[in-house]
Image 1 (cartoon, one colour):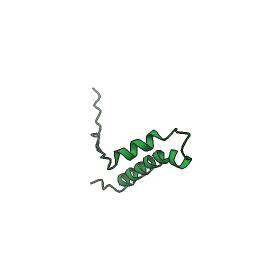
Image 2: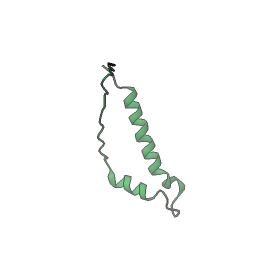
Image 3: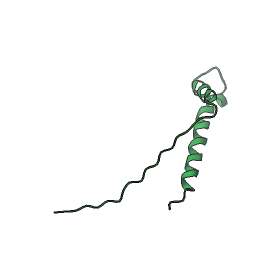
Image 4: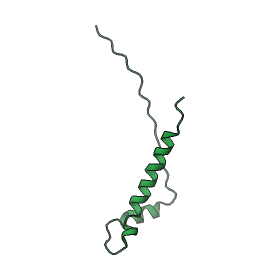
Length: 65
């Protein structure tokens, strides 16, 4: 008989509430609009990039007690 022991998997859940959902939806809708500036078209990607970077920073700074 072979016994295999594994450590329990730790999982965490993150719930996100967007303070200005209308802004997020508007920037997402403008991503492929050729009638607006490139800066405005990239706004959604930049917002998401900033969010992901903030999440990464939080994860790195979590104390694993």
